[in-house]
Image (tube, rainbow, N blue to C red; front, side):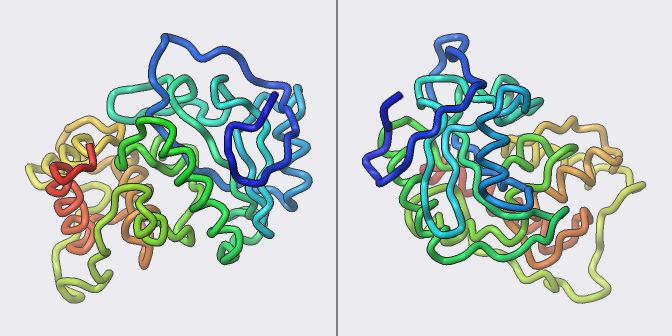
Length: 256
């Protein structure tokens, strides 16, 4: 294996990879956190045959980049997932693991040097592949029922200012005041249907049922982790709905 990126990186080939399926373009970039106690433990796990997982790149907290799978190959990082009608995300994506203990082992802010490395790597990848902004996603976006990463501390807005990903500036979490209407689990009706349709239009895997069920709560939670990080509670308050409307409306501005 030779490096695909021109950025300084170390090669450490993972055991789990295979040819991409279906002759589809590489048009997605999926960001993860490692969710393990250390970066070295994550590297060992991602390279081991018995782990059942792998990823194209790993970015350490000190900014070091390791490539483990050639971009031409299908890495095993997304698992069961959905985005914009596609389910074999591994065959059309590049996956980046970002070292962070995650919610289980002491979730913490990502160091500046690490984010700078992630921004540089994402910029390099997007320059070489036809990845539209809306297809730069969190693992939690494509698998909201299973995943939380890279979580609400990941600075998506900073990536966007570098030209990576789709973004609008967040609404205040307190928009509308304490007595403003909130959709939450158990709610039913046309407002719930409208919310679900907008989430599906944006790319999330959700049906328009008119019932605010556990799946809807999981998807709203994932949306908040990415776009409205000030409060992540799975409740569609005024701020969350306003953010979603603005993002959907902005899709015609080069975010396809």
